[in-house]
View (cartoon, rainbow, N blue to C red):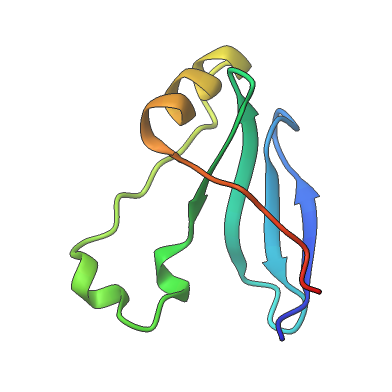
Length: 84
């Protein structure tokens, strides 16, 4: 089982999930328009090369509201659960 830590960065609207063993960010989640949305770090997938070239994004110049608008368009809906 992988142990995940979490932190907030930048505008503190999103929560970054990182592997406690290697410190790699594996995913990011946020509530957008009342719904939980998220994205994974494709570099953490075994077959990441099958996805094609990664799309690198910098949110540094976006306002908090612009970030949420972008996440609403590009992140996937998700649900999280704790293991038994």
